[in-house]
Image 1 (tube, rainbow, N blue to C red):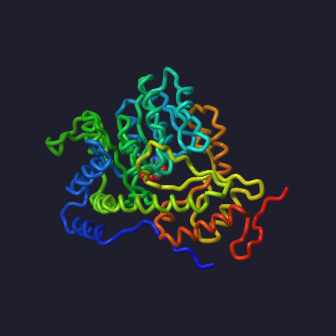
Image 2 (cartoon, helix red, strand yellow):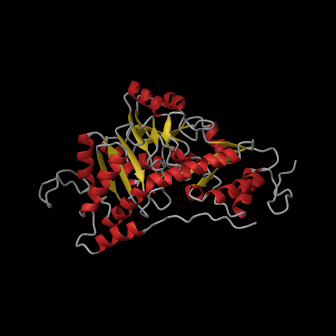
Image 3 (spheres, rainbow, N blue to C red):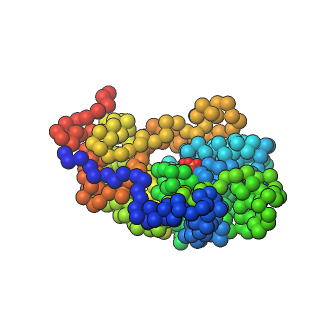
Length: 388
Ligand SMILES: Cc1ncc(COP(=O)(O)O)c(C=O)c1O
């Protein structure tokens, strides 16, 4: 079979080069270059928010959000049991206790009913993650947070441009945190940003990331205990170019997801992540599914797909609370049967697969079909089939 023409990631073009060169030839390479402020404004506006506060990654932005809300020792913060570690470690880093709750059976996202069950008098906040770009049910989560007086910090690290009934991810709570790490749909190698509509939160965040300075005051006057989380101008230059390309790339990925689902609609072995009707745009960071077959294991499916040249990840090796870290760090774990089952049967395709051309997507669908049915593409013979 012809090898699959899957694009590489990250991608860059003349625009990144032009903006990077402008920084390179300027006397300011750090966070005080005007492109950093320009990126913050453009990214916030693209996410329907009044303020953007950039930082050097999307882990410190979560830690910053929690500490600015005064969350610390004795407090609990509800997080999904399935995410990247930073969603939970940020809670631990500020001295609070992460409370792990289950995700829905096919949503890949925190289950609002399980949030409600986990609330105690110590609960201060909830951090929904929009897994793979598909948003958590923000209406249900907002209602619970309002009823119990909880802060919502959206971990929108996967959800650049995702939209719920016309409203962009990151704007549903006090703040939303994004990552621009190397694999994200907008990337600068590293990078992060908080967006918010709360003027006071924005002022405090901006001061914190800039060693406690106050806008318009002396460079050597520091008004609060802050630190230096500033994004460099090189990151901002790359990200401005990536932001320009985001809409066309979302459209391309969305078309690919539609085509793959159409071509694979009869494959009962795969249950794709839910598509909430309320979502009006999806970043399509990951195309996620659960694999359930009587004859082929998830690992055999993954091995066959990968061997055919289609990039695929066989999900996280454990839930967040099963990480060695949480054998030592304090946490509370609600029953998470779904999360534990995903670890055994879920997988995802990274977004660069979805940037491929239509012909490649059709070939990819054939690869997935053959792997799901336990057939080698070359011979049609059974492959890696589980016996007994
Ligand atoms: C859900 C989630 N939250 C937070 C982060 C942390 O972002 P960063 O790598 O920019 O620190 C990531 C990934 O990298 C992530 O996937």
